[in-house]
Image (cartoon, rainbow, N blue to C red; front, side, top):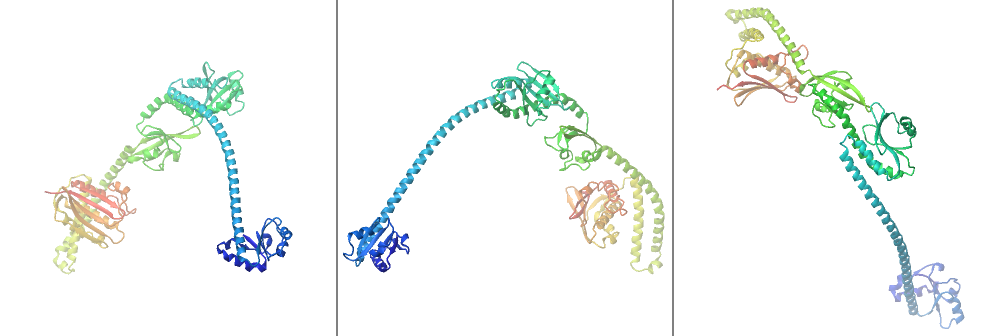
Length: 623
């Protein structure tokens, strides 16, 4: 409570408050008497303060004031008189004022709360009354809407059942007209109901029903034109009433369902709602029905055309999606995924190149593709025929290879004659030097060994030429029991230069095989030399054996670049080489494979771009 105290009585107020110290926080002294709720002072102090509705405590001596004076200072206020020397009395008055103030505040608070609750109750009563009225109206409206909705749903379900059961018949459109005519008669009078479908020639095929019979007209009609009634009047040769039309959604050709209205009181809102609910389903069934009828006309011709062709043929759109084919496919499949097993269109596709092309499909099938383009509904389609030319290309390749080998045989006979003469001379000179003891005595100690190696190499060259001639003439080689490790040792001697920059590891047993020692040495010479040439930096060649069941595998591994999958497929083809032009003939592996086959053995190559090549010579294990 805010208190204004005459300065000379401030100590008195403080002393009085000490009597009931618990009450002290209730009072707060202010400097301005206008803000005070209680004023304490003498008569002279109080009489000069002009305010009302505040409590006053007059501190005075005994018999100091008369009744008139007291009346003047208590006008409009509550006055308490306290003896100047009686601090206890002042404390009691202050306690009384505090209690009265608190009770008054509580009463006012209770009254305010009651008033607030009363207003809230009145507002709630009004809201409940308003909401009750709204709910009653909403329930009535909902009942009406629910009744209409149930009727509409029953009507729509009846329509769906009807259209589903009748969509397979040839008279489907006429039955639809009769069904809709019966429903719309409740909304007002009609003259006719019709359906317009755009043909591939851009004309409109109009089917209509007048409540008695149906008919058909072919004409060019624009149902988006406001003068469509005039267009129809000129075609039918009679006055035409107001035309109301709806375009069928999601249909393969532009189509409109329309009414010729006679009764201007026709409920357009209900009619629009009727068609908006049914047109999507009607479009779907009409589209399917029309497509089926069109397909029935061309399907036999289409099937016979496709069946008559042995290769692949299909119709695709500009995105390569298959629409029809003479090979199995699913809806939404793409031709390049089915025929070429690719994730993107073929690079030489005739659709991309805009010309007939040659390329390879799945299973290494070589084809020549012919195409024809046509448009349908503003979209490009392509009819493509693939002619399988795989066997033709293979036959052509065989003819070329046969001619090459024939030429090679004739060339070999000529080279054999030309090379044998100098080789015979070299052999004779070397043999003479070796037989001459005086001459060999004057040569270094290693010279005789080198001369013997030259003599062996000369003899080997002559045998190679002889084998080449025998190979060209397809003579069978003679086989005998030989030790593979001995043939390897004899071959490695001839490859000192090639192996100089690489490490050689040999892990072989003393097993025998059936082979031609000379041919086997020729094969090993080619394979080890190829391994050395495949390693551009210092590497290693490892020769070891492995037994599997009744076969012995002799492996030659190197740390070179290996071969790609594409090269591996054709590695044994004649004239196939991975070397730079002019560095290889492409016959080494081809001849090695042939020599191995002639020995009833096999040659296999596996490769990795990280581990190099692994060459396996496979022989039957001898018992």
